[in-house]
Amino acid sequence: MISDELKLTLPFSISEDEARLLFAVELYEVGKVSLGQAAGVAGYSKRAFMDVLGRHKIPVFNYPAEDLQQELSG
Image 1 (cartoon, rainbow, N blue to C red):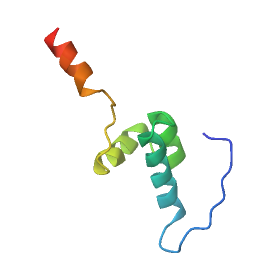
Image 2 (cartoon, helix red, strand yellow):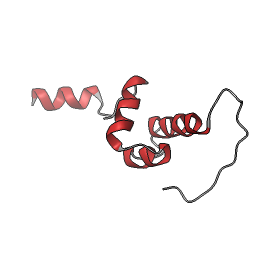
Image 3 (cartoon, rainbow, N blue to C red):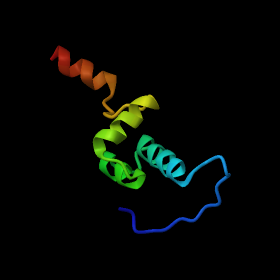
């Protein structure tokens, strides 16, 4: 779990849980945290967080297509 604390004033339409989840998704998407760290920030299990990433169309595995093609052909 992250030890630093961040305080925000959220619009009434966004709950703390939703903000935490969206923050964790963004941190994971830009590569600032691992899958496990992001899941912890969001308060989800890794499996549940992977489902969330899928709903946001964010790949769980960041594997360049060129590398995959090279491995399959060689």
